[in-house]
Length: 275
Ligand SMILES: [Zn+2]
Ligand SMILES: [Zn+2]
Image (cartoon, rainbow, N blue to C red; front, side):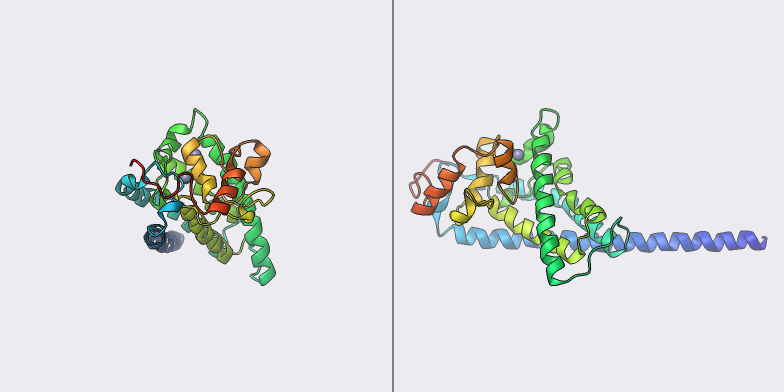
């Protein structure tokens, strides 16, 4: 064996070792992301269900019981969270390892506030247009699973087809490549989105206020609940801005929020109904 052959072997063994370490590193990120997401899914849901059970009058769709789908939705959520966790782990991994196209800003109070706002606005635009795309005849088959929950509950939040989960959650993968988001802020954004998404699917309205209707861009639970019950309205995530601009806001959204705000009850609130 010549000296150059020996060097090549040592080099290729070195490359294999570096790659194996990188893969192992990524798998650790992935396992952590999946474990934390699953833990948050159950912990948040159980806490919200306990709160909701004391306020039946606040159930938005009084005539439906989405809980009957709970076990199917839990099964599907545990599957689709494998995709979501993969996107988050890949984004965090790329950022931590310096593989992105832009350097994240150094973490300070102002950069944290600025980049959280930028990230939420960027995500909302991505979510709105991606979601509208999923409602086209070509892609709806990947989104139909999520819409089987006509009366969503906390368990419906991640009950998505895997393709659907990838389209919507890939934000966490690509955002760090083109936006200078510190990784801590990306994680904070994801936590906010988890709580926002879970509350948004909860089916019980506790948040109707002046802050969640015109002229405020914020929303309350009724917003996404109407998306599930009427299918063709309210596609955005954090804010109502894109739906107002795109003409897809449910025509009665603001009035419904105002009614909930003043009465604290759903239409026919508190009366018994069919399941
Ligand atoms: Zn939809
Ligand atoms: Zn939904």
